[in-house]
Image 1: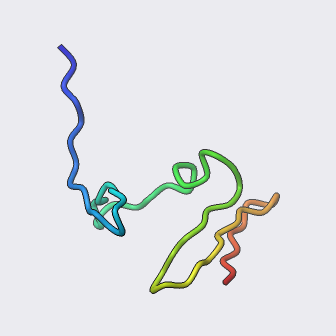
Image 2: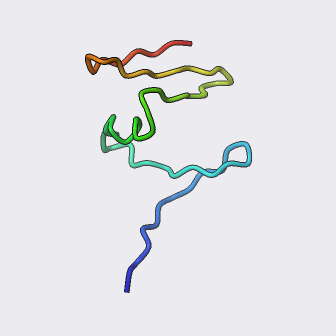
Length: 61
């Protein structure tokens, strides 16, 4: 029988998010599964993290 993976969940603004283990790195491939941009909301501001063709990361407000 398959056992589901369980992880702590945080509820922010009515949305639920998995709480990651801060002692382990997040691989950029996981962030960019759906494209070359990730939108980040931090302290009420929106930021855009982009992956360039050369594999560099650019964070803009």
